[in-house]
Image (tube, rainbow, N blue to C red; front, side):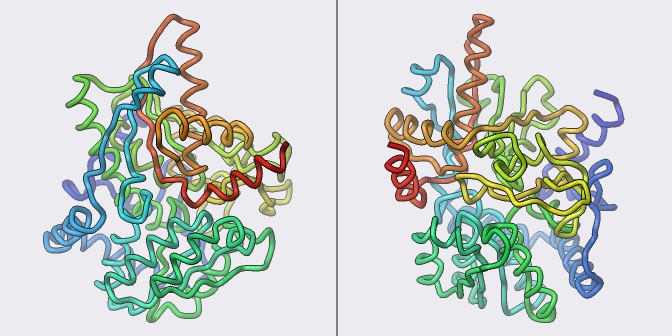
Length: 417
């Protein structure tokens, strides 16, 4: 890796809440990132960037954020050894238990942070897009806790797949708006949320849930989620006296992955692996593996890798997992892939479903379908080490629990018989 990339990674790997230096001033990660949004949104984006920079240097804000992380979200999340999986798969497997956070996933880390920012900016209302519903639930939860109005946009197909989380959002007082346009999934929900924000910027803050969108959103989401990697690195060293051979996380837009990767970004001997949604085939429209099958383009306010046609039109995508059903990836992931610091592999729907069941039965933990992709990738990579007669140490980001997916998984299993 070239020295200029190592210097940039060293800068990025400094924990924002301790150094304030994690923020890319120009909004770019190499060639990716930037602001490519409608003119009507530029004042709101600039306001957000200004307030966020101030917040990083405000001890009162940082103290309040970490109070909520500790007393409301339940941090630090546990690092636990997966004993039966370790024995069955022939590796030392450790799980960063984001599924044990309040609301059941890593999404609350970012939602509570952005909700606090919204209050700081004097906004009375927050909105969000959601696919699997976990970000929607986290945002609705943060809104309820802080006394904010809340509207969640969710594709109609995802409303069907994730109706438990829809009920949870409504119970928390949020308005859930089913989106019937396009493929009726996450991409379309994001489109509608953007339209809402453009009309209501004076009193609304858009809580983007993944490391996507125009600058400064990818940096903000990454910063709030980097607590995962910071904790995990310290915990792994404490229990093992060394770092893992590889860190594995699922990647849609990429929030949980960028969060845990940042704890190990300059530990160059640690492999950082992302599991993308391989869907049912490599054909366009039958997967959502943006890094493996995407090309450079512009969408939802940023420059990154997107699955698109030859004319630059964003294609419909597919994944069994609603949370990975997005045609692009965050710009920082695109950059890390481009310079060779991270590796990404596609996991098929059936592989993820099989691993969902296997992990549940072996470990007594039902992972989110998104996370099942990460488990499956870890299992495949472990087998490669076995061919070299090696027994690797593996850290998996267990980004969320799978309660929301159980009915859909059983429907699919029954349909396949």
